[in-house]
Length: 142
Image (cartoon, rainbow, N blue to C red; front, side):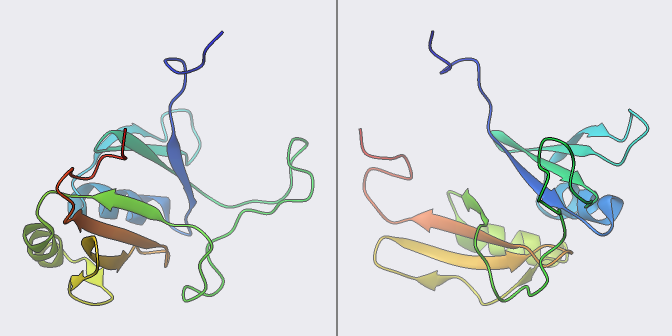
């Protein structure tokens, strides 16, 4: 059995203030709240482009992750994972999101196969925003 059509990928982030983060991913990045704590907990789903960002509070170990504690980044300048967003026009996105309050680390920079910039969310996570300069576009090679 193939899981190709039975799977979705979402990016889970831990937030110190779920509502503040929800507003960032909706009001600044243009996502749409799909679930906003309806189950009596803080878990929030934001549809963003063709995926979801799941935002929730941190917490200690559970029976299915007995040694893992979820927390916001202790040092926002040390990163092991980040959200990567591909856009058609990074200059327009940079201008629009900056006007909405996004704080980019630098303006977009030209690299060998893309133009990219990084933005921080309210909990310190970085998000890469890039525009490919490859003729084939942003899609992986077939």
